[in-house]
Each structure stands twice: as structure tokens, then as C-alpha cells.
Image (cartoon, rainbow, N blue to C red; front, top):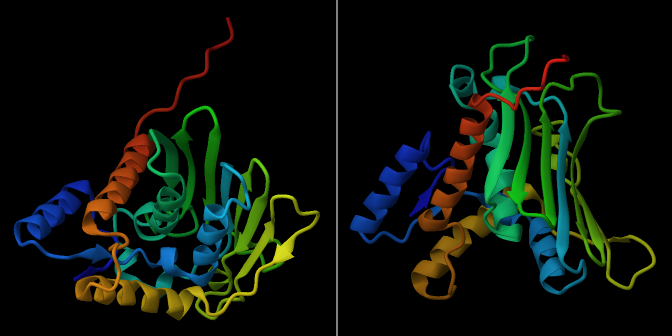
Length: 252
């Protein structure tokens, strides 16, 4: 079975879904399809081959204009940005870096509309070696020139840059870009990509479910067991956002 993301509206629903799948012995996965986008498959392969060394920095930076009106059901939803959009990035980061110890986050709306949240800042805690930060702004409606949708991943011996073209001028989008500065290299290399996030990631996501069910794939990627961990991270981000910040001392 393939379940659309998110895995329920909150962690309690995700837990209920997980328990149902366990009780019925269902082979079920969540549609976290960004993992199957060609640029992300290539990035994962480059990291696995050691081209970046050990990953120590992950930056996600979005400043764009998302047409939320395309999804009318989201206009009244209580949880939007993290639960419906940045959940893709959190899930991908978990795949690449593992589960963080915790998260500091703030997510909020915008005075120009009534969508619950469209702007998020988050720091994932991976200890004292790895820094992971997300800066997400869906309300940069001032022309394409300074808009961005990109990841920067730095390792001890190399780095990677990705442009997620789909989100720019959505739904038409722009070409995805993956560039790598490999271990021992002297310049950036543009990685040729075959396919794009849409529709190829969806095809890969569904193919993995079918191949796992038939015994051709050994791993069910983004299974409900693993998907629950992504939902736990999302829940922690919302809890962090609702909690008060550390107060700054008043001048004596």
C-alpha cells in the first residue's frame, strides 16, 4: 500500500496508522517521493561514494512565491508549511543524515493572506559536528530575480549544490540542477540529470512499492515505520514553534 503524505494530520494519527498497518501486516509506505527525484538519487549516490567526505553542513534556502490557491483545502488547514511542504525536506534530511536529536523551529503565516503558515525557520540538532538549517519563505512575491529554492551540502572534502526547479514558477517549474565539488577536485561539476522531480519521483516511489511486494527490492523506502519518524520530527517542530523562545535579559 502507498499512503499519501503526510501520514495523518499529526503524530497521534500517524501512530494510529502505524498500528493499523502492523495489526493487518500491511506492506505500506508513505509518499515521500522527493527521495526518488533524480537529483536526490544522484546526491545520495555521491555521498555514498565519499565524494563529499563526511557531511557537516546542510542548508535549505527557499525564497519564492508559492500559489497556495491551487490547493483550496489548505486555505483553512491548521497546519500547512511544515506538514505539507517542508516535510519533504525533513524526510530527505533524515534519509541523508539520520534522525536528529531535536529541533528548534518557528513557523508562521503572513499578514498578506490567511494561510496558517507559509514561513519557517528550523535548526535540526545533530550534535557538535553537523549543522543543519532550513530557511523557508513562500511569500517572496517580488519577481524571479532574487527568488531561490536550493540546498547547499558541505562535507569535509567536497560539497554539493542543488536547485529544486519545480518550486520556481510552480507548476511549470524550471530545470533541476545538481553540481558537485568532489573530493580531490578543483572545480564544480554539473551532474547530468535524466528526468525531474515531477513526474519521475512519483514513478520511482510507486515502483519501489511494487518491486518490494514482488520481492525484487530488498528495502521498502519510506515505510510506515520510517515515515512515523518523519512525522515525529514534524510534530517536534510544531511543538518547538509553539513554545516560548529563550528570553533575553533586560538591561539593569
